[in-house]
Length: 316
Image 1 (tube, helix red, strand yellow):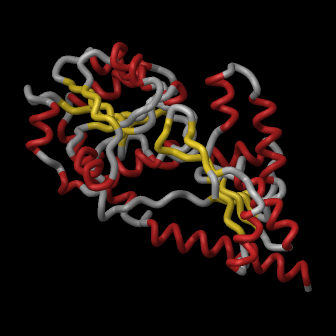
Image 2 (cartoon, rainbow, N blue to C red):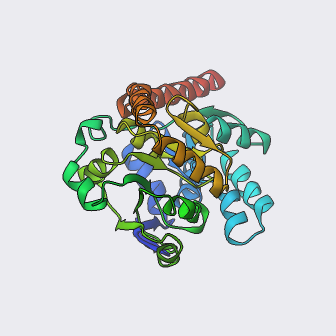
């Protein structure tokens, strides 16, 4: 399919709608159409599935309403109208977290079910902790607090500024995006590693002492799961996807969203207690061991089967 790079993220491309969508569905002899975040190409796929009489499952994974609030300070109602109109055409919408599911239902989206995300527990694991890397990142033996993700306004990474001011703490930022220049000024002393992937990223995760996520608009938050799989305690906002992922006081600490002082204090409490960090990290790893992609894939196949069965009953 033709595509264009996403502004600010040239490594991400947005596929463009074309007549080739319907042709591909027909050629593939699809029994069901899976629409990943259906707002551009997916809308064309939804229409093609409807014309062909093929059921469609739509995946909800982006908080467009939250983005509207962040970037244009308006348009939240319009975003929800768009979400509702697109997802109402699907046989089933799959939400990645209970908060996302409740939001969709509250805004009139029908036929919503929960489908979380998996994590690669083989790639992300505690034994990848790399002391040489730790000495490189924190040459004076500082506690390493990491953020992994896009560097964009909605992620509110600037909330880590107070953490940068803690004695004996080194903030490490992994990712890229339009906010990077400003964050380099806002987070004095932080180490910026740029975008990392694969085994390199897994080694960085395992070498952290604390993982801190700051964005309040996550419908899931995959990096939290990757940190937990790596045996690293988590600090995250008590909003969105992290509410499903982080067991407060067991695998990490949930803090009020947009509260820089709360983030700093949570990191401070973990920095002062190595035994607590170890306990949280071990509990986090144990919690995600059953959330493999294979297990989550089986759940997805179950949703497909339910949708196909419902269509069969209606046809009968």
